[in-house]
Image 1 (cartoon, rainbow, N blue to C red):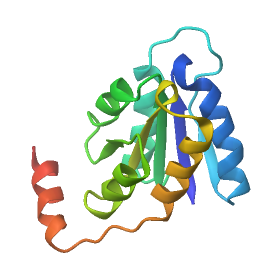
Image 2: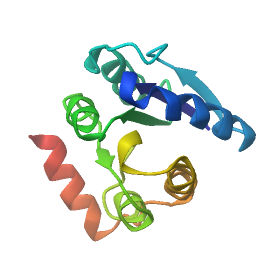
Image 3: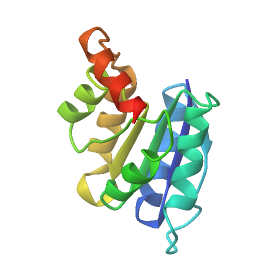
Image 4: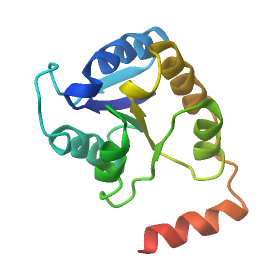
Length: 143
């Protein structure tokens, strides 16, 4: 799978770790930045991730920050993006099964790297259930 990834300075360390992890899982990773822990504006790196997923250039996206909140908000401004902020395995599973999330937002300050890896692996491996949930997704995308 081709996965877009991006972070601000507060998510940089986990972004670098997750790039390696995703590679070990056999995924191709496209890094949209940032490139260090120096303070930066997260939309500069999150919007390109969302645009790449929305355009079909990448199948899924992962965005990271301190809490992941701002990153999810920025990604969700791009038409066709359903970015889910997940802090545990249950929220990650539901975001895929019920909401067909195509971008995952994680907060480096909210979890350990091992928890982040578990969430990413589960999220990528969970399929969308479709059916009754599809109507909800279509309504969301109409707005």
